[in-house]
Image 1 (tube, rainbow, N blue to C red):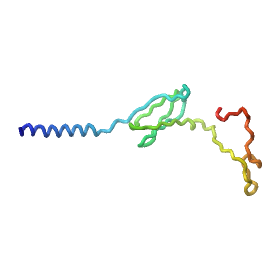
Image 2 (image 1 turned 135 degrees about the vertical axis):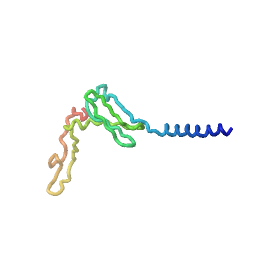
Image 3 (image 1 turned 45 degrees about the vertical axis):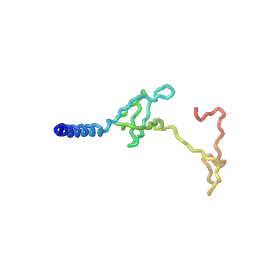
Image 4 (image 1 turned 30 degrees about the vertical axis):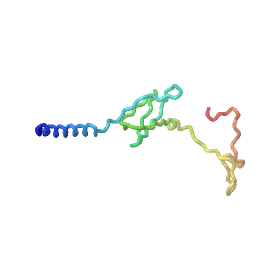
Length: 127
């Protein structure tokens, strides 16, 4: 009986050690690829950002809307798409209303009256 026990204990130790080593290895990073579309058409340029707990990873969109990202950690990811940086001619402006005048008769960007010109009834800001 003691001879069996002498064989069993080292065998159990080696089995436990093997399981510990096998379970402690990190998972390989992920590789992700795909196509970004909007209303059925590919998005022809921009950048994707993959927000993870360990940082932000990015990938560029190709002209056919495809992308490829590698070395991403496995886990929860939030993905954002940035296409505004490709269209620098679009400017965001803030229009000021009437001004109180201030020192020296300062007024808004529309002159002394301070109000924006009237909009055309057909103008749609989203079109």
